[in-house]
Length: 56
Image (cartoon, rainbow, N blue to C red):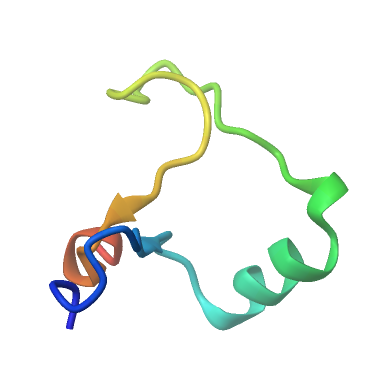
């Protein structure tokens, strides 16, 4: 699926449907994580081309 369009990046953010709709409908209300355990740094994470990893 992903090799068909090499210039296309599909990012997955692991969340439930309610959170997804809230993010899409209220983008100005997005709260970025700043917890001390954020191992990749503060912000929001998207996993490129990896749905399974996003849902962990």
